[in-house]
Image (cartoon, rainbow, N blue to C red):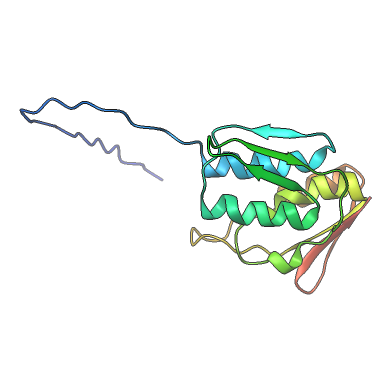
Length: 154
């Protein structure tokens, strides 16, 4: 397969001086993953520079359903604490995004079992999750495919 090299160039010409400030918010993808990672501990976690986005809102719903208490401050700081896992299954959150598969490990580690839905999410197309399932199996978890979900126990 031969790849063609494509170079793009933007030329900006103008007589006006640009000035001002731009506030940069954190990445929704990084924020969602940090929120899910907080499920690994029962200690408080603080995430700074967290954007307010639909992806973050969906991840917040997932974490709260599992057992997290989450606060957001106006300065885009979020505090998350999950003293205990209340729900090991998140299959009712199917087809909203791809975050539930990331909760598989934390749920399994803290609850001894986990159930996540087949994934939905963005229109990028099929992205395999085999490496998630294989990693759990290599750590001696039992993973099974069910009608609408994956279930694991350890």
